[in-house]
Amino acid sequence: MNNYSVKITKRQSDIIKELLKEYNPVFDVIQYSIWRAKAPIFQATYYTSGKLLIQGKDISDIAGKINKLLGLEETEQPAIRTDYEKYIGTDESGKGDFFGPLVIAGVQVSNENKRLFIDLGIKDSKQLDDKKIKQLAASIKANAVHSVVVITPQKYNELYSKFNNLNKLLAWGHARAIENILEKSPCKYALADKFGDESLIKNALMNKGREIILNQMVRAEADIAVAAASILARAEFVRRMDEMASKYELNFSKGASDKVIQQAKIFVDKYSKNRLNEVAKMHFKTVQNIN
Image 1 (tube, helix red, strand yellow):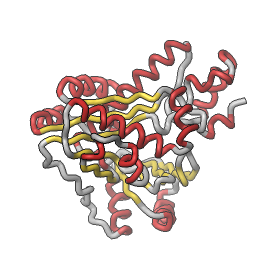
Image 2 (cartoon, helix red, strand yellow):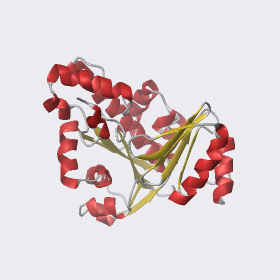
Image 3 (cartoon, helix red, strand yellow):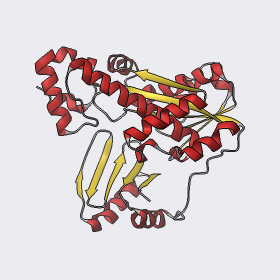
Image 4 (tube, rainbow, N blue to C red):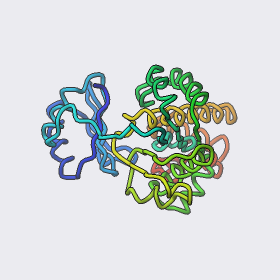
């Protein structure tokens, strides 16, 4: 196991944080997190949404201890229903990246393409490199009804000032992806990774979307449709980042690290701070570190 996530309470996170201390991690805070723990064999992040994500080469032992602490079976997986004749999965990319767009994708999986996607090895994009993601994205587009909603940095900043809430902005994007697919191929079910109050996406859906059954749950990327959507979103995000680098003749790293801050300063020196909104999400705390 190299990827583990679970929805927990603040009190549970405090207990888990103590449990992780036996691995002598370094604790810090990143964008949208309450805390992050970095150790040689894993990285654990507890997000403000209540989601705990642990990644590493082999984290089975850590996951087992946490599951035992939470009263879960070690092999417990989210109860995702996948026996519908066809349904939509949605996911996003770029949410935690200072530079670049926010991309939300939707993919409709049916009895006809589900086996193909499984055989292709489609899984959560976080477990794949960018080269493989690009290859799989082409296959997904050729074999499934899909939608890719790109919110450029300038549009993102405009919408964020309107919603003043990232989860509402995300919900708007997920709803648009679902609606776009329903226009091409009606179905009765959609599945999204849970990132906030379940009413957010439902309230953002238009008439067609409100007729479907919408389910949201933690670790939805375990489902083939959501995994396919995560690949499309990531492929488009990477493509847009490459386009941006070519247009401005600068490197733009992913995430919100110190390296990103230095690149932002170079952009400001070259183009002025007034144009930073063309390439970056301006509500990030990263902006405060750019002179």
